[in-house]
Image (cartoon, rainbow, N blue to C red; front, side, top):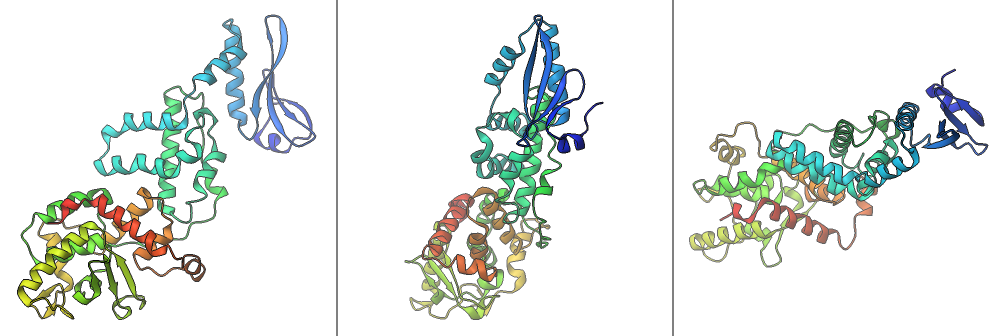
Length: 389
């Protein structure tokens, strides 16, 4: 009687026949493996096909058929399998082949993030393993560190690993399909994600900032540049005063009264933001003299702060209707999740989001601000200093 998936899991110690010489061997220790018994050159031989946790029932049957074909064709299965294993590429090698084959049909923003997600979250764990050794157990190990920290990224990584394995099967690199449907059953439920306001894909932000810098000089243009480069809320930019900035220390100290969470927030200023601020300071000093204490950076007629719509108008003037100012914070968050290895909490603090008390305590360390400075510096490098002038 042929084996079933349930029988494979529950069979007692012993040798259990399936069909065509395939056996499930269950040892007293509980270990389970596959053996194929067949005649080769007149001699009955047993060929090990691997443990059950690596080789499913359907895969074992496929391997059995493959080995029997080798024998019928006069080949030595042991030697042939050894040669094939020696020539099996690694998961990283196949991933890059898959990327090269598929990228021509993608938009630029997908090109930028697809391979980066593997480099940041996958290759360290399974990149050096043979592609035919990858199964749901290995994929689970990849996803566990990011499943709750970076849920959107984790789901994309799972989908992309599946695409690589499908590519490997279609190209004949691995003999059978690898199902990843059970992977999420070994992971906790992800919490519902907050819906963000319309955001620009992060891969498009560098080009947008370059085009923004080429627009006529307006207070809305300058305020929007600073908002994007520092990932702050629009209100934090609108009411900013010069005494909050220390350009020598490259910091922007926003007082608690102006923060949504009513906690003071010190923003590390990367090179592009400093370039912009130094230009603005020079212009303001030319108009108002060297004493700028208490003066706002962005005003109408030097008195009232700019309105909520001033920065949005700078976007709309570029014929972009689907993006909001606040959405650039989501662009920054997506970039930090997909293109860096910083923990989620570092990006959350860079955005001045409230985090849990336990996490807050864990991340009150002497190097915390320094880590945010590195993150903002990388963001500045990513969006390109050519975006300011």
